[in-house]
Amino acid sequence: MKIIFLDSGVVNPGDISWEPIEKLGEFKNYERTSAEELEEHLREAEAVLIDSCGLGREVMEKCPALKFIGIAATGFNHVDLAAAEELGIAVANVPAYSTDAVAQQAISLLLSVANRVDLYDRSIAAGEWKDSKQPIFLEAPITLLAGRSIGIVGYGNIGRKVAEIAEAFGMKVNVYSRDREAAVKSDVISLHCPLTPETEKMINRELIGRMKDGAILINTARGGLVDEEALAEALRSGKLSGAGLDVLTQEPPEPGNPLVGLKNCYITPHIGFSPVETRRVVIETCAANLESFLRGERLNRLV
Image (cartoon, rainbow, N blue to C red; front, side):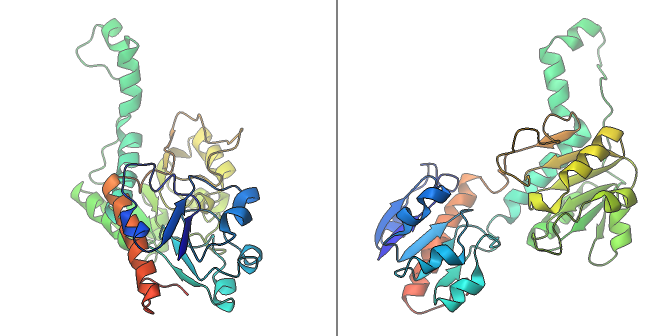
C-alpha cells in the first residue's frame, strides 16, 4: 500500500519514529503540501494522512486509487466527509488525544493574562526593577483567580479538564450548555467547541457586549469561533481586560491582523497539542486506524 503524509511537519518535525506507519506499506511524507502540489503528491496514494491540509471532492475525484484518509487530529471540518462517503473512501481521526495538553495550554494562557509574567520579565530585563530602588516592583495589576468564575463553552473532554483545573484554583465553573447567561456573565470565557456554521464567529460584538466588563477570553479551540475585529475593539476599549489565544482565523496570521501586537492579547502559534508525548500518540493512533481499515474494521472511523 502506498501511504502519503501530506503535511507532516507539525505532527513530526523529526523527533518521533515513523516506524508504526512505515511497517504498513510504502510510506512517504511531505513536511507541507501547497494547493498547487496537492494532486501531484496524491497521484498514486492509496492511503493519505493529513494534519490540517484540506481535502475536498474535486481532489478526491482525481485520485481513483485513494481508499483511506487518516486525519492526524480530532477536528475534521477540512475534509469533505460526504464526498468521501460517496466515493467509498474511509476517513478516520484521532479523538481525545490532546485533552491534557490543550487544557494545560488554556490554563497557561489564562495565567499569562492574570499574572503578566512576560511583562514583568521584560521589565526586569530592561532594568526597571533595579531603577525603581524598591524591594517590590508593581508595574501592572495581578488578577486573583480564586473566587472568580469561568464559563466553559464546549463541555467535552478538554472543557471538563479545564473546569477541573479551574476548580482547583478556587474558581466557580459555569457550563455554557447548561446556563448560557451565567457562562456569558463569567469573569473568564474559555472556548472548547468545534467550528461549525452555527459556531462560526460566535464571539462577536453582540455576545461581547453581553459579557462582563473586564472579562477575559481564552480560545484554544478554533480561530474561526471569534470575530477578530470585534475582539480587538473590545480589548482596545477595555471592555475585555485580556485575551489568550492559541488559534487564529488565518494561520499563520496575515499582515494587519488586528490582534497581533495588542498588549493585552497573548497569542501562541497553535501549539496546545504539541508536547512530544501527545504527538507520539497521534502517530501511533494514525497507524492503528490504518491497520484497522486494512483488516476490515472501523477504529475511529468518521466514514
